[in-house]
Image (cartoon, rainbow, N blue to C red):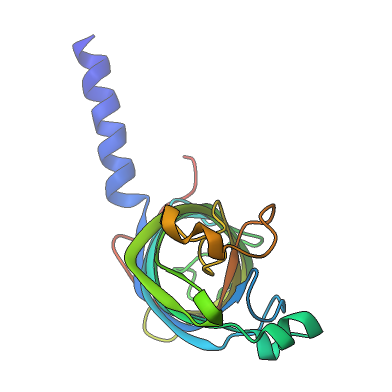
Length: 228
């Protein structure tokens, strides 16, 4: 039993020492909202988004990924194709903080130590925890409730990345987030006394989309994904 324990610990030590590589970097891009206020275009960034991300490359085909992103979230009825929204003319501008973790899968082997340029499309999904401001629309104007809420969501991200000089990886990605709330646009006020101002489709939850680029720096031991 003791020998088996030592063997298992030795294998785990070898794996974590030599079979991984790390990436840390930034996300720069924009956001747009899809809900009961504003345009319903799926990809139409209209506010800046900044963040940091970390990846642990478990193999040439998948990575565990975590990120923290901050963004303004803006929606304007006047920019909608719906005449009813244009006539209503609601507008909101709020803050959003997202914490996300999940799995990134690449369609091609992404070997950062082959000595050649590596590139591949990829998909990412997992879970998000999103903090947003609460507000409502008395007389058609955005009024803060001076509170904030958290919601859980599912990110659905597609992108393309390529290794560049000096251990950097450059990526471009578009990611929609489906949330489990209808409160992000103020259509469902959080305080009971403001419920009279609710509006929109209560059967549809809110979405938001991040579009932008990632730049990460790789570090750590060179991985060995082969089985000897």
